[in-house]
Length: 461
Image 1 (cartoon, rainbow, N blue to C red):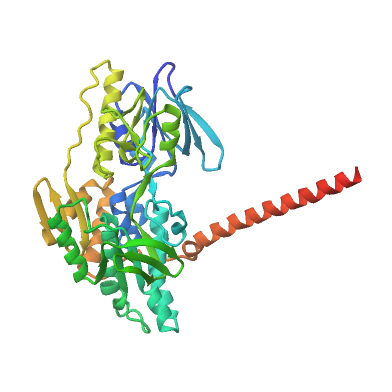
Image 2: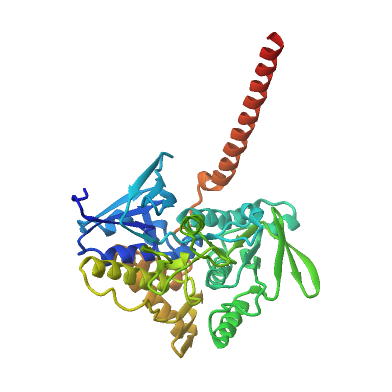
């Protein structure tokens, strides 16, 4: 319960930005409310390992309430935030049952994250899902594992080849890591388990319009990553733009013309866009936004003209900072401390300064690349650094312990413990489409019936 007159801080989002902002406020004289659409925090740097069967959802997703069990000034409410009224200083959210509710604030911290961007081609989403949530990861795992089962059932060699072709769009860290892991599934995990197909003959195609993989890394690290990808059998297509995607493949365009890649499994990791909430805040406050919809914030991460509203992480645009976890972590901590100091009557401090700790991306088993402030590592040395950093940042002791065991089983052996696919996972998207189409059809029928009744009443009158 909020004490009478106590300052109310509302944090939208329980990702890295929201989590670290709330932690910094644990001793502040304020009532902190965290609003999150799901009941869990996702450790996004490892979500691709859920999609490829290395880790379970529970090892990268931690209940938000568990984080703040001992933080007495903090409450957690589940709901998707849909609107912000800066004049009334209220936030509107939708509860899991669909009922909207409002939460008042004195200070608002927005850390809502991003959504997948298809660059205006949203129709691609049905055939090439992205990887932004646990639901996405579980669905992708079902698609990847089921592709081999469908190939085994195929009686036509051409159909089997389509099922054994995987297209990943986007050569950033997520795309590179997914391509490497799917290659390992096909080459290391599955051989010997099938009788009609050879999983090792699977074709993994990594496509991007850029001129090198991992474009935010140094050219040397990009070259090392591409060399390793090609060595493990990934078909790297750079300078290649995806112009269309449908159920059976993707059309790509290069300087030589347009080519069709037939593939039943497509994955999109080419871009992100600010969550729709950013646009609503920009419209309500008059704040400028960049091309991706991110809000251009002041040096202290506040919305121009609204010192009570902070924006952190992927929703903010400042000095061309990248949309990576460290920006969210550091920004969240900075904002939490700033609000705490304000409430204590202290000087708010210096403008936000991002300390770039470098980039790390894993390519395959025992192989990664790392750029760390002038130090470049690749191969086993890079992989060991990647392993240590990610293990250290996992949020809970049990997550670290179980993840370490699963990594040992997968990397030292061939097995992946998270390969189970349920019918619910396979049919989830189809079921949602069926519900949507049924609802639309019912609505249309009801409209037609209403029109018929109205016509009868009119003629009777």
